[in-house]
Every structure is written in C-alpha cells, then in structure tokens.
Length: 341
Ligand SMILES: Nc1ncnc2c1ncn2[C@@H]1O[C@H](COP(=O)(O)OP(=O)(O)OP(=O)(O)O)[C@@H](O)[C@H]1O
Ligand SMILES: [Mg+2]
Image 1 (cartoon, protein in one colour):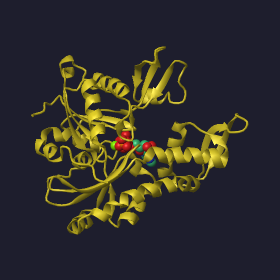
Image 2 (cartoon, helix red, strand yellow; image 1 turned 120 degrees about the vertical axis):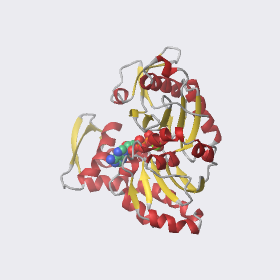
Image 3 (cartoon, protein in one colour; image 1 turned 180 degrees about the vertical axis):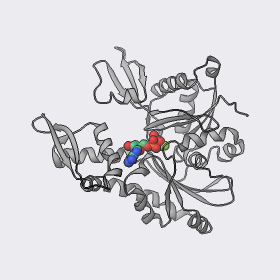
Image 4 (cartoon, protein in one colour; image 1 turned 90 degrees about the vertical axis):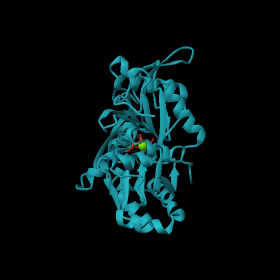
C-alpha cells in the first residue's frame, strides 16, 4: 500500500499526542487530555482537547470532566478514544479532502497485547482514519532519530513515556529482546504527590506535582528550594511549602528504581553477539520520562551501556511513524512483532 503526502504518522501517547506528516513535519503536539460535557444519560461529549483541556485538570465546572483516553499506552475506553481521535483529525486535516479517510501509521507499545492492538486500530478507524498500520513505538522512535531498523547491526533504545517504560533491542528488521513495564513518568508524578501529602501534609494538584518533577532538571544548578503552593491536609487552608530539590528527587527514587530494574531485565535475553554493537553505538533514550534529572546516569549504571538522550525525545516516535509512511518494508518487517517480556 502506498501512502500519500496527506497521510499521518501518529503517536497516541498516555500523556501526549503527536501527529506528523511523512517528512516529519509536526502537525499537532498536545496533551492527550479531553474536556467532556457529561450528559444525564452518562454520555460524554468532547468540548476541548489538548493544552486547553489539560489546563482545566482539577478545576472543571459541574457537568464537565477532563479525561485521558489512553492509559499505560493503550486504549482503555473505546468511545472516548474515538472522540479524541476525531477531534485530533479535525485539527490536523483542515481541508475537507484531507479528512476523507486518511491513512496512518500509529505507534504501539511493544508490550501491548493482541487485544490492545486491536482496540487501538478500532479507535483510530472509528475516529476517522481509513487504514491504520501499527509500528512498535521503540522502532518508530529509532527511525525518528535517524536509525535504520533494517540494518544488520544491533541497536538498543529505551522509551520512558507517561504510562509505559520499554527497552528494546532490534536488528535486521526484527526484535532481539524487549522488556516493558506499565510504570513510567506519571507514577513518578504520583509518588511526588503522595510524598508531599504524607511528609509535608500538603495536598497539591497533578499539574503542580508534574511541574515540580520537570523543574528538577534545571534545579540541580542551584541550591534554591522549590516553592510549592497547595492546601493543608488538616486545616484545608492554602499554604506555601518549600521543598529541597534533593528531597524531591529522593521521593521519586523508589519509582525510578522500579522502572530501571524492570528495564534491565532485557539484558537476560540479549544475544551476546549483539553486545558489541550496542557497546559501540550506545543506548538511545527518548520519551518524556527519560528527561528526569539523573535518569540517564541511573540507566547507564543498570544496563552497563552508555546512554544518550535523543535530540527530540518527545516527538521522535511520531516523526518516525510519519517517516515510515514511505518505508513499507520496515512496516512489513515489524507488523505484529510479538510482545516479549
Ligand atoms: N523534564 C522532564 N523531567 C521529567 N519528566 C518529564 C520531563 N518532561 C516531560 N516529562 C514526563 O514525561 C511524560 C510524558 O512523556 P511522553 O510524551 O513521551 O509520554 P507518552 O508518549 O504520552 O506516554 P506513553 O508512551 O507511556 O504512552 C510525562 O509523565 C511527563 O511528566
Ligand atoms: Mg510514548
């Protein structure tokens, strides 16, 4: 099947949705969040998607709710995902003929089950995509970073997103080994949230906790504490708390350790012949979770390979999915790549 210049590469992520053209141009890069109005019959009508919807997380008026259609990288609610996909297509295909059943290649977690893959295809097709091909996200991300997955050389990539963390080694169009866990960036945020509640008796919203986590990346240059605004657990009144960046990092540490241990499992199945290639090339990391302060070093210690961060860690999966529109042999090689744990 040949794809047209109006077709899409899609990364329908737990945290962010990115859609690209086949030349890698980004058409949309928005949080996978949807604001819906709740009907008396339980129906949910999408009102807003993306940044505007995310800004309303934790502050939605009565009769509305924000929701995330994707959990752990997979479709949990077909109806809402379908609604989300239709809204995304309306934004990226502005001209009516572009909306006439476009075709797409969409990333899928390497650890997704057959049923989860089927649900993703169904949500995309019912949401308005005419024909969907799935490509494992680690392979799409690698292509987005300029790696040729058909090369007779072993590569290893790590993708830590909002809901899934995966490591995959591949060579010559096939998977050598992979390891996947459904604990990633969002659980790091949740750990910080819980810590603030338990240790500082402060209730903060999800967006505040995520913001603290993201700020850790720049805070290591300074010793300035982070100022956190929230509500006191006991009095219910607003309160400001200062938080030391090292303390925040320690709060997230057990979650990060869990993820890194799960990813290091891949080493058990790695063919020894592949080790030399990966030692030479290093491991490529992408996905927003890999941006966490200290994550790269932690991963290097666990894997024993040098780890480099991708240039565009948040968009390379969609860029690679887009570029695969003109790489039918890659899509065919990885079609239905069986999940391995
Ligand atoms: N600088 C940063 N430091 C730490 N975490 C970050 C940073 N920037 C983004 N993140 C986290 O990265 C995650 C989102 O990453 P990404 O967009 O790759 O996920 P996704 O592809 O939507 O999810 P998945 O692949 O699991 O379905 C969020 O948990 C976000 O908080
Ligand atoms: Mg992702």
